[in-house]
Image (cartoon, rainbow, N blue to C red; front, side, top):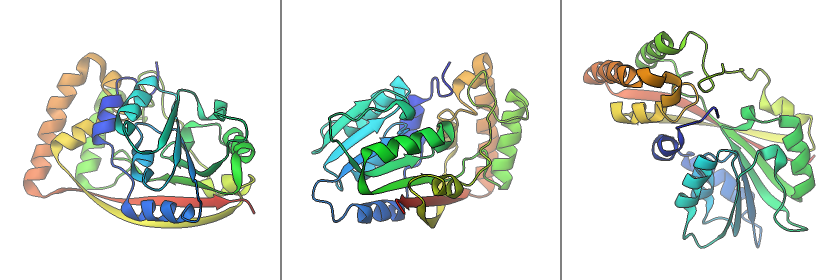
Length: 260
């Protein structure tokens, strides 16, 4: 079973998009291109290409989960750009035509799921000489630290165990190397980092939907106890929300990498 089984509709509806400042950085990266081509790896349900569709002429979306990719197709249908959907792993992406080259590659909240050296080697073969590889991401409500997120994580652990889950049958393998170091060992060794502070205000309904979009708290992870968990989670969230807003203070990092 995929780590993200059952999550696609919740991912499309409840996952936060990328901050406006990140969109601005990515837009500037291809501003001088006459016909910019975007390659989005590990796209989820297409939040990045949806945010950038007015900036580029072609979009190639790579997502291994067929249900996620179907949601991406719904989100991008009718846009005035060429969109191609690739249901495959990032490591196995094949350019759509001979001579195809991406000007901008985006990997958002996904590089930790990939064979990183293999992906970066592949990108060295299918990107324009001055291409930008953007690796982006933030934490999650699992890693957030506040009274309400700590209480929520404790509740999840009562159902799933103390170790973070990665789908129903696996535990999460934490990524222990900075992405900047990994990029520095690739062809894209010239790296600049941008840190964007983000304040998110959640409702109880949004938090539940978000949890069901994750690999650590999907409906599949809870199995036949999902209704019991949801009742307890809603009660916990409503209690905290009655005292103060459910606020998450996140940090969204953008690494923009180029060939040295």
